[in-house]
Image 1 (cartoon, helix red, strand yellow):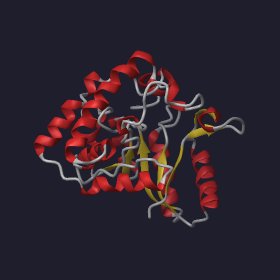
Image 2: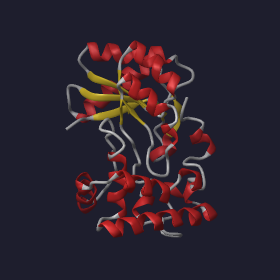
Image 3: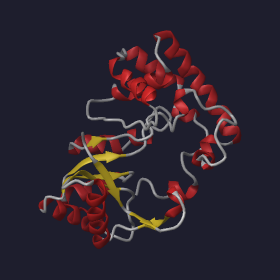
Length: 256
């Protein structure tokens, strides 16, 4: 088991979830405060992987990497990670303290990292930990128009709204058809596609149900040929995905 956690947001005492987030904060003293608090809450002596949640434009990434380097030297952290960082930032951080992993959104309908970031981390020997590999549940085929609850945060994401949602549903239908031919679920097919992109990739699908966990694990046993991979990618071309993955504010925080 690997315990990973993050620092980098300024989190206030009021509200719930992301509503408590007031901005980014990767000042060295704040990194230390977060690390100590995480160790205490987790009840462990060391954090296996400590990520910067989002790049802080007000703090040089060299200072961030240097602070984590000190925490590693003190035995409180084992490895340094970044999340949604741009290629240039990754290189600068890696020069100070080797980056073990990059956690960024990556799935059949979010493939922007393939152009520059994925080649960069492979050149540097950094692993990729894709979050939302099932497109925040969309690629499972379980989400339909009106199926999300009023308080579901996905309602605020452009891809899950109005005409964009309707257009994107047709992509999932194509994925579901391919999965049906293979006798597996759309979720298993989507995860298998990611697993076939390289052995340096470890997706982290989120789930709250044991049945879904078992379903996701079944993707490990799915074998896809080169023709299968091409067909799957063609069924869900990123150029046909409607809507951004975040609001304008959220998009401004990725790739820095």
